[in-house]
Length: 187
Image (cartoon, rainbow, N blue to C red; front, side, top):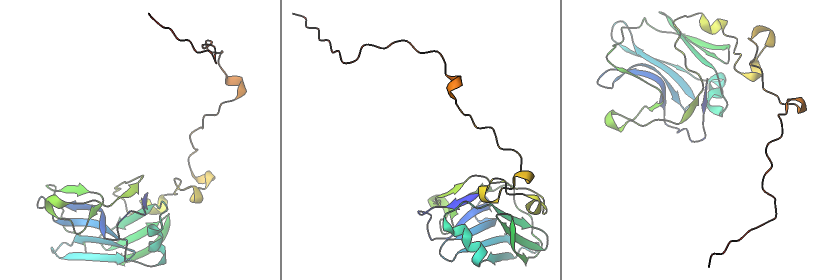
């Protein structure tokens, strides 16, 4: 679950990406706050760089300052976006190539930053999972989003602590008298 903030820059940033040891992007998701797009990128099995951009009314919701649950499902032949447990769009891709294990995984890096001058975009992230299942997005019930929560389909919420008059403890010790000020003078 993520939320963009008023101070999130208009500049594109990688919501999530994997960089090789030379800090070159290999795979990731880019949010572009000015164009209101979500882009998936990677290298295919032939080593060709490929991008798939998602835009439109449903994608634009990500950029309106509320929390949203975003699923991006990547299979051998397609990339599918599910936002707040509703399918948005699915687009074809070529099968992915291998990703190095010598790199780093980064959240929130501004796309134009490079090398030792990396900069991050401010945004809020409540939950981030990488799940190796193309069916998880269709099984998720979005129980974390109050507006979408269906009580019969979601686990019960933790019990809230409530205090009542019956749960008062014994009175504490008496304090000093109020309104009396003492001065001591030593001559």
